[in-house]
Image 1 (cartoon, rainbow, N blue to C red):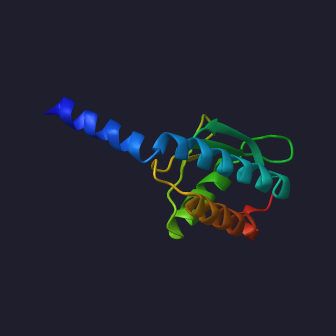
Image 2: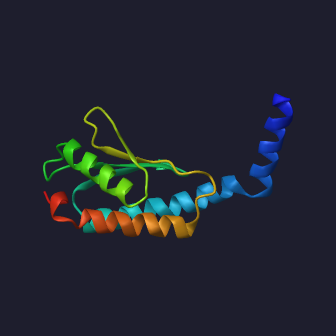
Length: 124
């Protein structure tokens, strides 16, 4: 039974081109995060592959800003987008949406991020 379920899952992944979607949408989202990085210097490194992405929040001296990361994650949750913090200093925001995450979803996420990053509480 487990093998049959596993085969069915692999078939859906192939038929719905979910790996290709993750690659393309992930690259689009990563580029969008890099665009936000230019606008908001609080964003340090942007990294990841496919739909598993992360970005760090740092001050002008590249010191980690865990409190700002917590604020951002909580505000995004209030807006219906789940993100989590990670890293030794809890200043890395992780994005790991499902494989069906679309370009439209990526645009919504980027719009909401830009909104929260522009809030006074995110100023450094």
